[in-house]
Length: 388
Image (tube, rainbow, N blue to C red; front, side, top):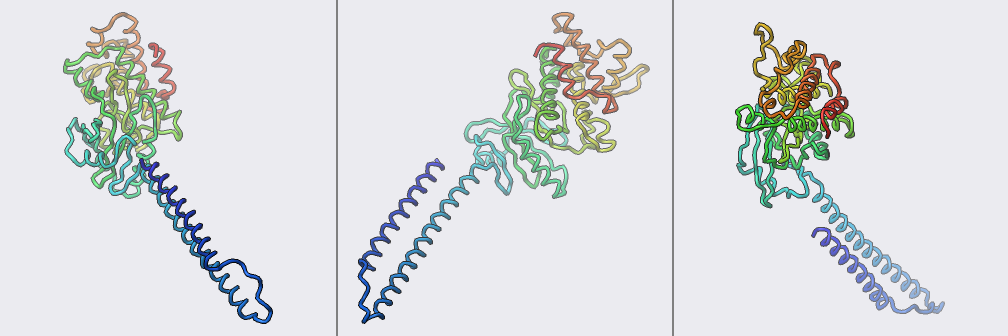
């Protein structure tokens, strides 16, 4: 509609200019009259007086015409700038980046009202909201990570760049709102929920998850990491891989959310999914993402929470990675598997795939980043377990 209106206004302005120039020609002819032969040499003062009047009127008409043309040009540029601004997904106070399918006013209205609370974590709350146009979205409201204005500007720039990432296993960022209280990230709503929600239901025996589906989830996650680490330009890190950031669609295809949103490592370390080097030296690499994936793979295999107590030998406490490596070295890797998977297993081939996946998870959870595989290597490792 806006483009059509702009084209109509441009045509109308052009017609006005043509009509104005035409009228000027008629007026000039009437005022100046037809060209007359030069006056006789006996009356030179009148001749020069008429010439001066003609030149003055010509200059005046030229100035008026130029002014009108300049005014029309400014109006056209103004209309074009308004069109570009309306198409650009950035508004200020608060800053909103939105999809063309989500009008900014509709988005703002949904965020200002109290949406349905889906869950919460130490640094975020999750909501379900229905926009005025009937679109159901998931909104994740993040607390601000840092009060430094420079870091806030950097975080905002990262969010703008993330809005352009597209991959089958990435949650496309539909919109975000930057406010003084933090950020609100808007995604498509997935009724299945997050991997954290599903695994919680599995642990409570409310839901059964076959190995085929668990492996499909793991492969989808690592393909998303491979895209971030090797394919997209510039290459990126996720920084905050955990089940609450893995959203499942109706067919249990995983979509990774919150890519590039850097958390407080000391606070995030309590979740059990952050690599040890992150909170020891605040150093984060692609191998740190791989460590977090290893924890997720271990959770898919064992069904257990990474903050559970894992006893080794005489009962000493250990981490999930230490526990998996101990069982593997002792030849008891089968003890790490979720009993529900074994009950749902169809043949021995699936069990062999699960035992191989235990080895992969254990090496991903190595204490030293150099000992962990890359996401590129992980894609080959996991896809070889089954056909994808």
